[in-house]
Amino acid sequence: MKQINIEFLLNMTKDYLDGKIDNITYGLDFPYEVETRYNKIIKEDKEMAEIIFDCLVEDAASLYDVLSEEKFRSKIDKEYNYIMSIYTGDFDII
Image 1 (cartoon, rainbow, N blue to C red):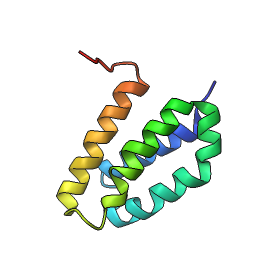
Image 2: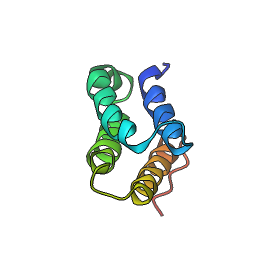
Image 3: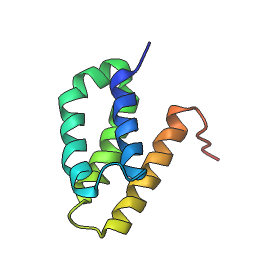
């Protein structure tokens, strides 16, 4: 099954990390995109939907106006790499 909405969110995060989106736009738009797509994301992959919400919305994007730009980018990068390791099956719990 194709995961169009999950891939959209992961690509949006990658675009931010690549400098194509500024931190304020990402911090405001990413949670909105997750919220509007959430029911579709759950249908695509419930666990991944929860991980994206927990890691990238609650623990990261919501901090766009609290952290410095450098710390915000670092936080998003850390969470993105964690999510991508799960998404691609490269996650190692050991």
